Length: 324
Image: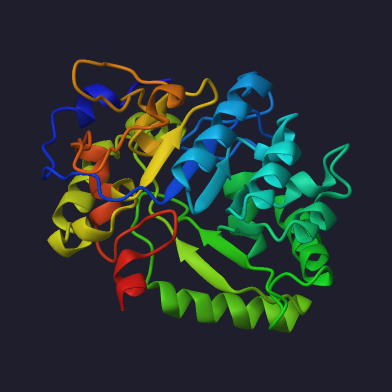
């Protein structure tokens, strides 16, 4: 796979610093039941990296000692980690809000038949990948049969109350463009999702998040192989908006990899750009149990324009629309 970092490292990005830590985003492993074209993690069925029980204990200790408001669990398919359910229940017992970055079809993976019920019982906020409301686009990006499996999974989540008014069970969908283009306006696309999914399947959800594809890992390699990398970076750079800098997720989020090492964001994690502090070139979460990172400089490069281009992009969707 062609490495995009030497190209990204040459592109300057405005200097930014960390604010108050609110969210701990934990990647519990890169194993996944899908192999998606746009995946910035390069996840798939053959990946073996997995967070062990000892590192999960460090995560839980950090949540408690630092009074973190939100635990954002991601992967791969995070549910494939043997410690996923223990992490969820322990965090919920602390009163921590838990988010699951969920690919929907994992519900039909062997051993996960009761997953929707488990998530509902623990009031986990589900952030589900659904890159389009049309079958051809979804199957092209995520694999044949993924659309049908995703629809079945969404219906199952709805049956447990997710996305239903007054249930308290939040179901958010995530859209990624199919290729090297910026996401369309989030509110307009959300209206299309609501209409099509309701009319065709009776499916309801809370919010749609639109995310730009990051020019790293699998998607970045595809861009290079197709001769589209420079053009996509140029598009991101020219669509940059300074006002989006205040809302980028790295200001309030700390990313943790499956070994427990920390990064400013999930994208830096995939580029192996660890968070640095003082003379330390790589830090473990266990070293930060009592450390205040506010004011720490954030490591930036060309890929960061993916978060500030146009309406902006973060783990919570468009920055511009979130501000409005």
